[in-house]
Length: 92
Image (tube, rainbow, N blue to C red; front, side):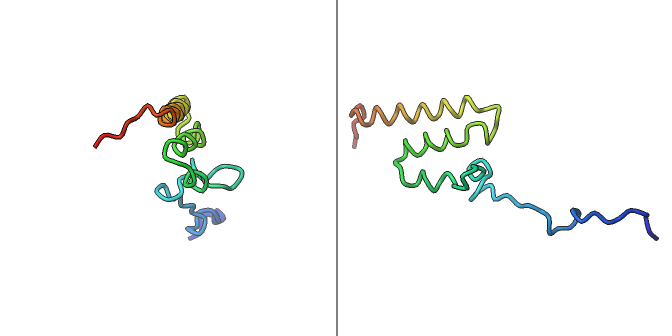
């Protein structure tokens, strides 16, 4: 028995978009440049890479946490400055 409705082509499984939240989350892959954040951060040290990551995703992962992301970037920048100024001593 017909319902009188035309089938919706978007109901098909072939139109399902899957986002890989582990390997390629949207907040790191949605930049208009087409570049993924990790393509840049993997060439930096830990502090600079993390600062860059938090600047990159600020407002994209959770808009309510934009300021927090920017504060985290500042933390890693300050930590890198302290490291470069020799303020950390390796203890064994």
